[in-house]
Image (cartoon, rainbow over all chains, first blue to last red; front, side, top):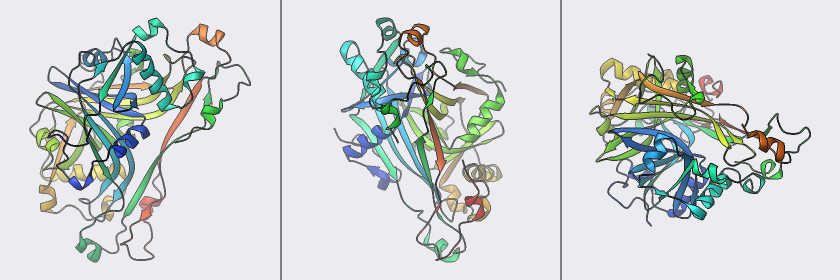
Amino acid sequence: MSVGSTARTRVHRLPERAVSEVQALHDILDAGLVAHVSVVTDGQPYVVPVGYARRGDEVAFHGSSASRLFRTLSTGQSMCFTVTLLDGLVLARSAFNSSMNYRSVMVLGSPRLLTGDEELDALRAVSEHLIPGRWEHIRHPSPQERKATTTLCLSLAECSVKVRTGEPHDDAEDVTNLSELWAGVMPIVEAFGVPLTAPDCPQGLETPSHLRQWTR
Amino acid sequence: MSVGSTARTRVHRLPERAVSEVQALHDILDAGLVAHVSVVTDGQPYVVPVGYARRGDEVAFHGSSASRLFRTLSTGQSMCFTVTLLDGLVLARSAFNSSMNYRSVMVLGSPRLLTGDEELDALRAVSEHLIPGRWEHIRHPSPQERKATTTLCLSLAECSVKVRTGEPHDDAEDVTNLSELWAGVMPIVEAFGVPLTAPDCPQGLETPSHLRQWTR
């Protein structure tokens, strides 16, 4: 597998932001919580957020078997799977050079329907991706629940990675002539808060350690 | 304008999560930083993150005139524009009832190319959406920079809003039979950090008040 190696995934705009390391691809996918998935129906693209997990050189995700998106996807139609992590606002001296710091992955391909043990393992992977250790603390899906769930995977064979980091890049004349203007980066952080116990839990039930210890 | 009123935007899955108030639509768009935009080329959908701003009953966004995405969009092709705000992980006693708390907007339509004063106002709106007050502290785009930028807007006429909030909804028998299992919500928060001054700013330059005072 190589990143950004097809005509459809080569980064044309700002190629200095293209990243070709498989490790960067994996790190971004492992750090994200939600992907934006697109399919086309009657020429109209639809974009929907989904939870997911990386499993080796694939991503797995699932949804309701009754949903239009998952009915369309389970026919193996061409799709796009994009994960974006926003790291900061890049505040240059000019509007034009203002930007964002981000890490993003775009995967193109046709999904494959998972069944049997492979499906169960993908459902476990999505749960473990969101909260490691949780799978052994929840009731696993019943046959009826699995029937109501469509679980898919998409190969990472055709993908691109684009990353911007660091300070603003202002025009040299702006740095000289507009030295009274502030420039810099406004960092953006996403974090978990304190877990909120559901009101239908027995009084005094302790928050399990796999939740207390897990941070982002 | 009414939310979720066409066959393409009516929420079929979990219709109790569909929201029809225009105020909710505006609030979600005003709270987001990045939209995921999709267009179709040769039957293949592509999904790319963009900064944006709401201007009344439209969203405005811009990108490089040289990018494939913006070249395709500027022909007025059908697109989808989705904003997702992730509020928490919903951790039920069962894998099946586990979910996410989120607020999302999906807009369908054909973008309109902005020019002249309307374009400049949209560029200002995107800047002000990200950091209110910043537009008067930066150099505005030159004619060449505006030529290198494609600015588009999309009507909110055809859209849907979907929201999930609150605690997990476990099956009644799971609440009774699996009372030893913890359930609840892991909140997710996104926040700005402390602004980092660029190294090419003069020593001692103070962070302006529009940055110090702006929080999310």
